[in-house]
Length: 226
Image: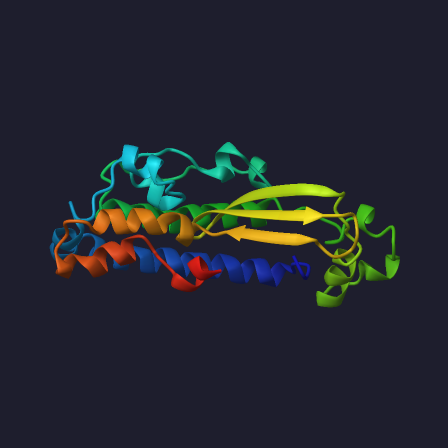
């Protein structure tokens, strides 16, 4: 976090979460429970668990095909080990299932935010162990946090990190020599991982179903281009 939380910040977050929850009830009634929506999404762009596994689908789109895996729960990183993460899983593997899983992710996110602000630890936002180079970086704000980061040198070698992003599992790799600058960095983004699956799900579909399939995968071209 770049800055510390004040009590009025937490109150503002709570008010926002309540407003979002109220809107979600309306949106569900208008869109998800709409027979037209279901007719356009149900049994469209079907991708079963076997195909999703073989094609390397990740994130909510894998869970929509019945693959019960979530890095936040199964390979916890950061503070996720302290939280109860219950990912949504659907077995339909169609555009409707992918939509429903992503819809449930909103509820999961609200729950995680509530857990986080309830158990937010007290004290400085920059740990004492990170201030050994320059105590002046204790100050809050961009300059304080970034000042600390400039002194973090990874040990020489190859390092890999996985994280559940909005569209699925993101992999980051870095190669380091022990110097301040990283020798090489590589991102593998979920849109790139899910692209082949989206193409497979479109095979044999009607032209009118293409937008529904495309959007159900949450595909973002610039992310894949990266």
